[in-house]
Length: 182
Image (cartoon, rainbow, N blue to C red; front, side, top):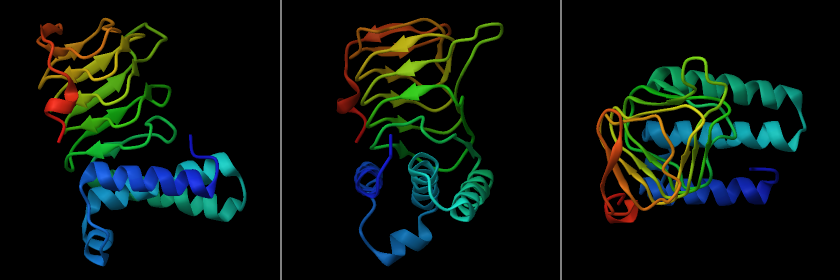
């Protein structure tokens, strides 16, 4: 959680590295996903560190504007450092979900509660969530898990370092996410 200026800088640097963005004016201005992630992290800082209510309102509006333009519905304080969003497209994440450091998301991902279930997913560090994946319910996904394209994960896989695929998802391999998340 970002609670200080130093935390903000550490999260921004981890996100920049995970996205593969260069430290350049071109990346700051033209990379829409990087701009969105910066607005997300600044909103988290404003929410957690307190301070000027006008700056908080401006951060909320900027985050919402960038999110709507790119198709992202990602609330603050959900992802750990090193978030990597592959490219613009619909991504919806429940506000109570908790996702660890170094997560990579692709287009059409949904992470949320299942119908009639009050719980939401807890996803470990260094997970790869492929295009079209759906992760629902009060479940736990372990570190290093790969969730394949169009998989529907509705039960826990806390052991981690497993590849999940199918509807409903089941283990299909033991390849950790570091092998493909580059």
